[in-house]
Amino acid sequence: MPDYDSQACSSAQDDIVVKVHTDEGIVGIGETDTNPWATKAYIESPGTHIMALGLRELLLGQDPLQTEALWDRMYTSTAMPGRRGLGICAIGALDMALWDIKGKALQKPIWELLGGARHTSIRPYASLLPNGNTLEDYASNLQEKLVQAKKFGFTAAKLEVCVNGPYSHGGLQEDNSEVTKIVASCREAVGPNMTLMVDVAYAWNDWRTALQVIETLEPYDIFFIETPVATDDLDGCAKLAQRSPIRIAAGEWLQTRFEFQDLIDRGNVDVAQPDIGRVGGITEARRVIEYANLRGRIIVPHCWKTGIGIAASAHLAAASSNCPFIEYLPGELSESAIRKELVKGELEMVRGEIALPQKPGLGIDLEEAAIQKYRVK
Image 1: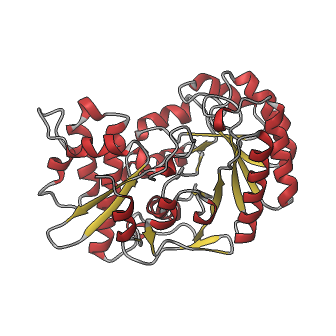
Image 2: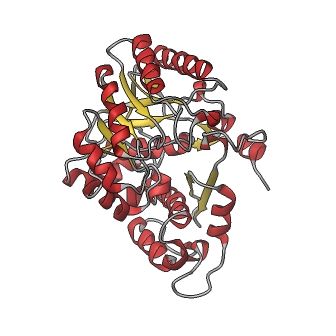
């Protein structure tokens, strides 16, 4: 976005979109949720030795239909600089594009290539990040967006109640009781039948404080509490999950199945939230979903970008038995023009559900005018 605010909590203000071209004219599309300038440089950088090759050169000349083999090739051959973090995000964007190519080449939607649908539709929840420079404005805007989401047909929504901790909105640092007040007012605004989740964005430094607040939220029938403690506090997360009356969800920043194995087994989370682009793409997200299923855990993919990531999440959810929701940032309720304009033919929600995508690949297209409008050269 030309007027992006680096102090805002929304990563929908920027994006990196990748296109992978084949010699038969098929173009695959992918995206990931991390610093776009750094990711572009990482993808295009040439390699210098066998443990630090370049992603672009690793894919050139390869068979794009060998998705899993190409993932392993990229991971192994970039292990020194890219085993986690930025490197996996870059692989994630490319892998998403390779699956798009595979579906287009075989004339099948990706969920069909993943083994077929486990559901007749996909249920999105509206992910709602409010505006407001004061607590009153913040809470009021969140209620307004929630009521609008219900009118649009959403049957579930996540409340971004980011008023404490290192990522609090606009530097707000409020008493813990304000979290409960905001959630209570939102529940009252939409009634008992709408499923609500709450994201507190790593609000608390220790699990005991988190538990005290979470217990006050129990009367409001919350499906999960997202990221109550720091990502790396796996022991604290486990203690909280064991005692919390509400499901604990985490994982938006994690990369690869290996970090999710730690989160599930040591952190004991109830709900794992791989972001398809960040975790390493569709190939690696599928591995995470299968592992979570073996451990009896729910998967709810994180997604705070565009219709590209939403489509990838929908295909994975359709092919998974343990994925009851996907995150969906409604364009109508987002301040990001990139979110609104980048994708055409986006998957549509009707009466709270997204029908199984029928078009080949991801099933979406880019709006080239938006690409040129927001492209940073």
